[in-house]
Image 1 (cartoon, rainbow, N blue to C red):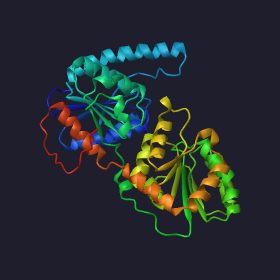
Image 2: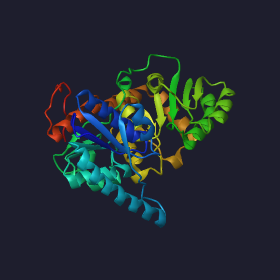
Image 3: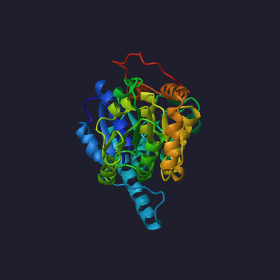
Image 4: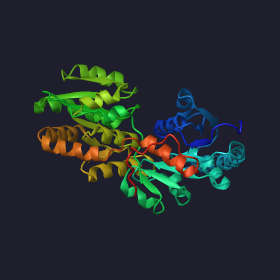
Length: 375
């Protein structure tokens, strides 16, 4: 890689779309400002597909997680972590990045180790209420931490956090209050792969909705695994709505929804805030460090959501909550307003600004229209 050309920023981390998609949004802002960007990730992670498709270079490394694994697998992962960290230290000497941006996760480990050794400033984005292991470990050495919840600031040194939020597609911020309708529309989504818990509870709730006589309309993303069975059975209920394996236009689905029932990943809660949608959140119980539970807890405490545990989520509870919220429009409005207060427009742009500032590069083509909210 040539040392000539624009200053280079390294984007560390991958594995899931939740790590990669926000990084790509920040990378686009850096490129718009005239800088070069390089991603470091793995062959099997979402980055191997998403990063090249977005027009960025991807340097591949071989690393694996170390949590909740057998001893042999953990030892192999630790060895690969050491080897790849050494490789990254050598690579950084060639690349000479001016700063590293990390979303956390085990994939971010080697480039962040290299950054520490080479004294390259690190900026992390922590979208969850409680940081993951990598960001907690690196916290004392980061130059800036970009957070989505005020309470997250306590995990990082004083004066180094900023409440930027997570980059979210602009379409979510443009969503308005649903137009008056005879239907109470409920959006159910367990993510792109679906959720058996959410799917089974929805199926069990169908007859109860009919018994209650509430004009419920359902938009249900099942994921591919249970789509055929759920769609076939739903068609026989006579209930209005639609069942999809995957919803390609999620902002449009949000725009129709009076209530959203979903998991509590960082992306999901950020989209709920941007759209100002009241929600029932059922955290995935096996998420690392219980981060989904802490995310849901933060929205619940803000008055924007109802939190239900996975083991408690049944058709009976689903139907009861829909009945209760349908009959309480004032509460729905209050939840919507509380969710909107948690939104952070311009997160990708602000993250890029902070990266440039932290790198010490001349700040050009950056205006200051976006208000800063520092903790």
